[in-house]
Length: 364
Image 1 (tube, rainbow, N blue to C red):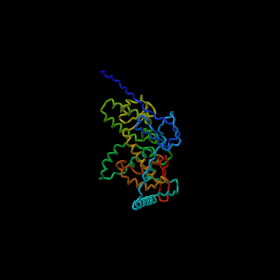
Image 2: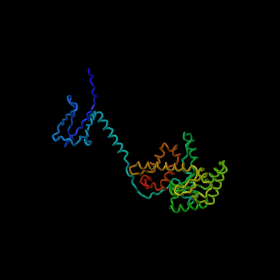
Image 3: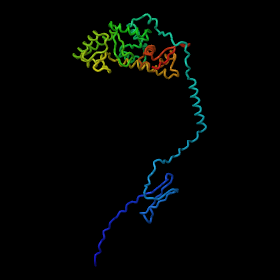
């Protein structure tokens, strides 16, 4: 008996057929494809609602990206009568509040107000003595600290870290004279060695004023506290350099003895505008600048919240007295000290009203 020969079975995989159609308009029609149970390799197609369908073998069917099916939003449930009444009541209360707090524009009797400060008689007696003006500004910078409060000791300690500096805006507001005349008097006092200029970039006119005696007292204190011989010698030579040039606020790198030591001590800062140039400074000058800038910003923001960006001086003082951060954050600076800074820096201007003096922003 002959053994039957096996015929090798070749698994010929039938390639998957590709659907090819020629559709002129199938945007809103549905293509239904299914395999027949008797002929799995045959694919029957059916286009529902496609009157313009033409069958060819040259165009492939692809999905359209421009057609999107939108989903209807669920309708919000209607409000109950109690809810509608509550919402109406809130809207009425809001309208009443806005009407009650609506500010009316202050009646102006004169745009040129007779600006007189609280101690104007003493200021007039000083005349053109700029040194006395600087001392008077420092004496009236702070309010008296109440005794027995929780902030009494911290406020006193914080004031000790603020250097005795004066801004040019305070000098202009205090003297109430022509700016050119004030600058001339300041330069005369600096040349005479009575005042010392400190260069700061982010203040009006770029300089701060300090009594020369207090400036050199701080420098001598730093010299005594210095324990390193080279650093101590650099501070002593720097003092001699300043005494020989009382009006200069900028020095080159070659003129300074050990510039890095002077920068670390706080009596010198780098000039951001010119390379190899340094400005005369004092330690903790940033504390003074932050105090003045924060107080000025607080008053400007308060006036910006008003409808016409103006307010009576009496109302401004009441709001400042009611400020909860007046002692801890602002160290108890006086209301008039801030007002002079605003007036001297042309941030605010005053005007007369029948009920008192008013202040408004200049837009600077």
